[in-house]
Image (cartoon, rainbow, N blue to C red):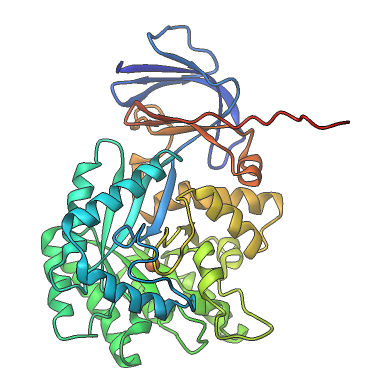
Length: 419
Ligand code: FE2
């Protein structure tokens, strides 16, 4: 494979500026030049014919350790989060390193082929041998030439759900997990939940890691651990190193409380991660009618300037039997459930699976199509963000670290009917 690629006639997407048509020169893994017309020639030129060129998609929240296990050992018939946790508790008894690695790499390849080059995955560290974590740490290394993977040490059964879990979390951080996770709403008591958040912040400071907590993933309007995360973020100054995943109870809070919380949020800059495909599926299961949507207040958080990104959470596992790993599915679903159909709102949903995700993962200057940055970009069969989301456009080319790693033909349908 050549070290240089010249991309001609790119409609280059920018986070805040209008789209411009440019050529892009890629050399030795980096963006070497961007200009309306580059005069040099390269052994490998790709005329993208005015298709959309975007930084890669960012998957902010997935569980690769459970991906592709749907139906093992049984199907989730109730469709609830809690039946999913029970099924996973059984399935994880038979985890092996090869099992985890094979499914995780298959899922990452599936995502990379659809333009995802940055992924944050949770690894269950409630399991006594830490097989899920060790497997994903090996995967992180195995895929590093084409995918950036962050691994979250996630205590699925609670940090205090059984006596060994706190020590397992610490061992996971010693082994090299990138992010400290948590699940305060699933701890045995509210007090344990609060205590777990204080402990997570202390561990993150001790090991110099990011934080990503499954927070208030329930329809219970009394589940109020987000305020504890916000208070810790304010007091420690950890701000943008902290992410609150799901926060689905925020949907159900009374407005007086929600507005107060929105005010507190202005004093810090934590990231929010919504998982619209699974939130709309799992939440509201105990409602009759009206049935709540159970997705956090994405539009209001975005309007207030908080960083919101999106994830799948699950792909074909005990909690969600569907999913293909396509981030445009997440963005498309967010547009619908969060009622973000205004033009700026649709564009914002695209940003939630690109630039905002990069902010959540703390990628800093590793992300974006600018001269000098690593050459990670995708070409979509679309004219702009709206077109990409509406049609869930095909990702035609995926360039990772300066190399073309995947191509996909856009489907062509020929009309054979009458007039
Ligand atoms: Fe999750």
